[in-house]
Image (cartoon, rainbow, N blue to C red; front, side):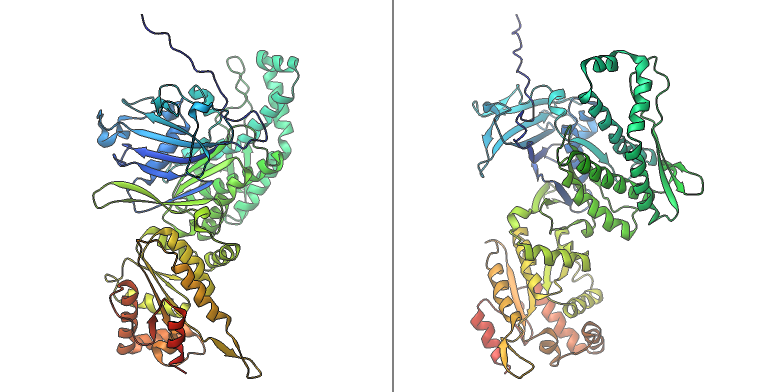
Length: 595
């Protein structure tokens, strides 16, 4: 006789105590899924996760893996044979996706709770597909120290309602699919109104709501009427935002109330329309607009919905949270729209109910001044294996408030400064002149320097913040800065301490914190780049005049090339008046030789 299956008691994912924080997703681990092989790819989760790396290394597969586990119990949580490695079933290479969750009380049950190295309470789950279709879900039993057929948080439909609801937007979705994403997000206004009505209604009204089909039509009218102000406000804000890029256009949201109530209690059709066009002209469906318009409207809708949630809930995140899974948000967007899209994505989690995971090839979408952002580089090893490396996490980089302010300003001045996250060797320089000179050398000899990224700090103090990131990044890099003079003359002819000199010690201090297995070279131009390389100061238009000298003189070109080579290959000696140093006394002695 078969053993009677022992059912686990259903437990809520979220604590019944309102003062206990919502569980936090900590890590996603994927193996044997699509192009990802036996070597697990680990992704640290945060409010905003940015996946960077070359094409065809599995970034989109990671988005899909996250969508699958968030959708367990529905059709979207099933796999096709094409999701298996090499589109084959192999009993030694089952697709496995593992999820780690931090909890703040013992609501899931003590046997499911372990501890992280930081002392947080951790719950582990995994999903295994032995055949295409639905997976087997397991929980890590800390008492048995093994995977269990029982699971924390009960059946999939119980757990799913409290996990983030995925909203997947692929890079090249069809217009109809993109339009559906936007309409689905906007429909949350009406859905939230329905939930509020149910929670406020008396027992008799709830019974009437659920049982009497002839009341649905009246309820629809009531909901739409009560939501009229919110919808009109959203239409107005959408129209104002979209008209900045498409002048004299407006947006109209038509919920299409259900008229045929004989066989359905569904309040609103899934086929609601979103119309857009000139204020005094024809309004056509959003799926008939251009790709840039559709994507711009998506950002704007997300922004307004996020703000609406904040205003209406005042920080109280009722209901299921959301996760936006986004492929290459920069595609088809105007440069101004790219910057705005970046702001929207980073601001979306502020409502407390959204998380964002995005892939990108655009450094504009990397803002290390934020406190809620993890950057993961996905790449293929020489052996052909996919790996994910967390290259930036704000709680580990130890950036102070001044660092964040400088990086924020730097990112505004130079949105491509974060290109070093995408690979290659990094050379940090202090100012525009060095940046211009080195990029000219690169343009003349592109094959020689194709993997070199020159990072322009636009100020000596910002070098300190960039060094902190590169140390956390655990990459080899080099730094070139002006030594400056220890003292400067006042207007009265007196000597006073030069503030720029003290920053030299701060740069050295941060470089000394580099990881043990990385190599760093620190060079100083004595006393500044122009004087060291040209032998004279340049008073005006430094980058332009230095570039003219570089183009006209073969000797100076070779000197700058030697300097760049020494910043890339640490065995090459730098040119005269550009010194390598690791002690303040050595730097001071080098400066005194010029006096």
